[in-house]
Length: 300
Image 1 (cartoon, rainbow, N blue to C red):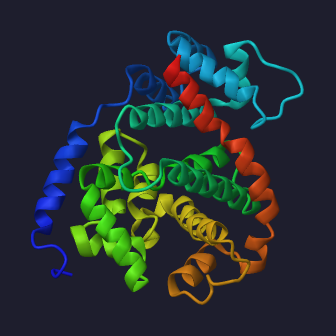
Image 2 (image 1 turned 90 degrees about the vertical axis):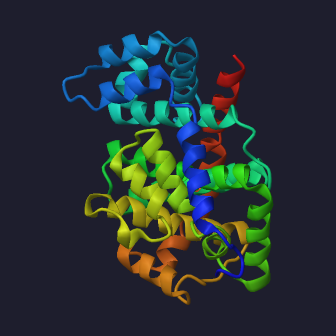
């Protein structure tokens, strides 16, 4: 690997400095996350916090009234929305909006398409949530799988932004040698987007489970025991999303050592996974509302 990068330690040092300079999450988002993590907090506590941020309040109301939730009657009360969604879901919505807003304030996409990046991210989130539902995850926890999938590749953005030319070289190398992007990133930088994602998650003080998702979705065995179900399901969702992106209907996961191991660990076979195809495509269109609402919020 040294043939590609003469000073890989320098890349790590530079990316650590870059991540350290990233803006923190908004004060409102930080307070909401702290409140949600306090078992004594009530919906009224959340309502008071979110109501202080008209943009965030509008985002929550637009989302609950969107096709993503498909309610029969519109909800106009923020308190009612919080009660209906539940504390964990509200926490994940606020976290998603806060992270998407931070990333949009940066000129982040240099080498690859932002549209393709977020399309893949939404797809992984939708698949992860579908798998979690099939595997019997509690309804209150299923949004964790969507958010984990949505955010899993965030480590690519600092690498691409800080080292656009080298990242372009990594993508070319992956194509030429039929390597995984992770393999090519390690060859060029000595680190990969998982390492960077872990740094970003720690910078933003995300939960240990989300730190594991960002840092270990290509090596889920290295995640903490309490996080492994989430990380393995996101890893499987990522693999399946790549097949959907390529348009293939063939089972190539079981021919791949990593894919077969992840399928086995999640406890699914190919046929059960591929039966989700139509549901996934239907849910993707609904889930895109996360990105649309975030964009509208940032322009408000």
